[in-house]
Image 1 (cartoon, rainbow, N blue to C red):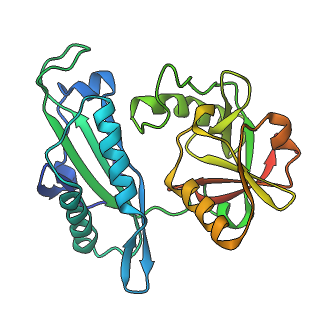
Image 2: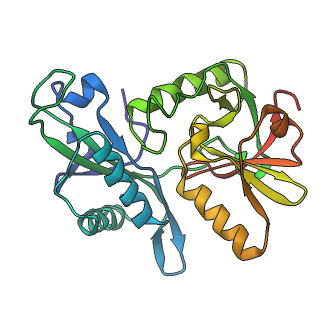
Length: 271
């Protein structure tokens, strides 16, 4: 099957290889048990050329996520920054999506990793509006899905791990099967958690409302940016749990995320 991303090169443990030669061993621990973590990062066409959005914060979270699953890699954030810069320049991209992945590789093939290799992969490619053409301009239709977001006591939602996203896969497939652009998951207490890959904001009486990570969400870098911009602009903000009633009676609502950027929500289950 032909690759559907336009990445031509992949950085693997300090060396750059053609994308078609970027392989992961069948015997890698991550293939069998999901032990890998990742980041999604946007690069924009800035005034002085390509500009990667809040790269230090993304790389800090990558390292923290890796440590949570016992993955220590030898490359510094400065080295990863240079690798990302090099990949973007080599491929002549002005705007792109950046995907670093840290995975547990070959070694002991039981549930408990022991003396396994830790590998770092980075690729960049072109990626338009995550939720489809026109999403940023016209908004998206969403539905509250049956798939519940996992509990913080079971899996730490502040960790961006590949295995955690099985929860999101089920949510987004369910939403699409019902004719919607995206799904919103509830937490185990029946309150709003987040989208399959996005944080959620409400607008009520001219103020922004978003929920805390304890409600089972990954506190995103874009979410943090929106809160900082709101503060700079003198827009009131509140971080508090969000109920379904809050969502359906809000003046406005929107998603935030690296891939989704700031995407308006125009409809929730017909409302």
